[in-house]
Amino acid sequence: MTTSLRSHQILHKLTYGGAILRSLSNALGDSLSVADFGAKGDGVTDDSAAIQACITAAKAAGRSVLFPDGAYVIATLGTQSGRLLLHGQGNATIKGTLTYEQTFPASADTDTPLTPAAPYFHANGLNFQAVGASAYGLVLLSPEQPGFTSSFDLRDCRFYGDKGLYARYQTGFSLRECEFNNRVAGARFESCANGSLLLCRFQNQVESGVRIVAADGNAYRSGGENIKFSMCEWAVCTHGMLVDQHDGLSMDNCLMVDCAIPLSLAGSDHAKASNSRFGASQAPVARFASVPGYLAPAVSGVAVYGRPGGTPVGQRAVGFSAHNCEFVNSGAGSSQPIVYVDGYVDATYQLSGERVSFFDCLFLASVAHASQRLLEIRAARVATVIGCVFGSYNLSSSLADAYRLYQCTHPIGHSNDFQNCVQSGVQVGSSSEKMLASVYVQATDPGFIGAGNIWVQP
Image (cartoon, rainbow, N blue to C red; front, top):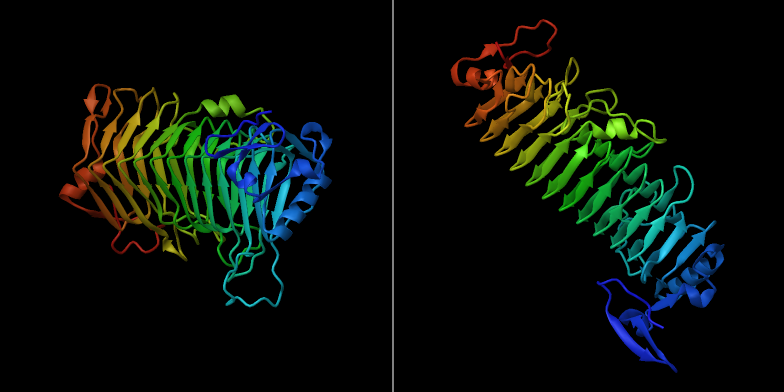
């Protein structure tokens, strides 16, 4: 009998009255198979008790848990704690919700060094199939307690069903080559920090591919910090990423296509993107609006949509910088800028936006649209647009500006290309750039607080 393995696993041949193919780690005795504890993997039998018994034995022996090819139903499975390593062979699938919850004693010493038994969850080569409306396939939880680390690592995993991954208060985590094919939502990170996602894919989610938010009652990290996406892809999602009150989001060599809003930032600062493409389309709105779990976007056809967040509104700023990125509207009928970032102004916080910058980027409206401008930045302390290309190709019915910097403390705009930014056969540049090249006009709006050195368009 031959068991098929994914390409990343090393094969080792052993003969016990017949040839079988096993992973090297299993052959060396590092894994305990759930099949040896009575799990059927037939997609019908409840394997919860057998899997729980295998997990308990593996943790006691310091070994990992092996799921041979099959579909394992877990109607009820107790939450886990400590160190847990899972490996799948072939098309091994867990059907139900697997929950890993780490707990700490109330009197634990935060200065105690981490040990090999420190909280850690690892899954490699497994499919997670959520069962039931709004259910997640994998839930990873840790208490809100500063000074502790609870981390996880997912490799070559796939998620199906309504929702994929739910992680809360996780620090130091990674996902590599994971695929989210969920109907409603892919991955949700609540108050998580120091994470890396590499070569992951999210597609056809009616809410969001990724959602980063603050856990209820969080007092330490808000929406989290320092999560990096590298070479990841989003396709046909209502929201590619919904990011709320997060600090230090990073994207490099990523692709977002046909999303109503590829990247939505609320009260999130120090977000960065490089060498990435953000493709906005209104198609998901028409396609998903009647699907249960659908979350209507605040606007559609906007590649990056940034606005203040927090309580009270405006307490947390929006900051975003992009280098060598493409922002494209490929869905007809949009009346919004391709990129819109609003730092917000109010009496308490005045200019809450920190830095909004675009270097060597492309802003392209590739279909008929009704936008007045392709890029709009409002109420940022530093607003920079340098070396960018703007293109509309005579497709707009109302284009007035290539880009606009409004109520920004230090606006900087130059060396941009407007050759293909055309309205009614006439090239359209930027009044903000013309103004910066000639004369500044001080803001006189009596409703604007702290106008001091704030400059706006004439």
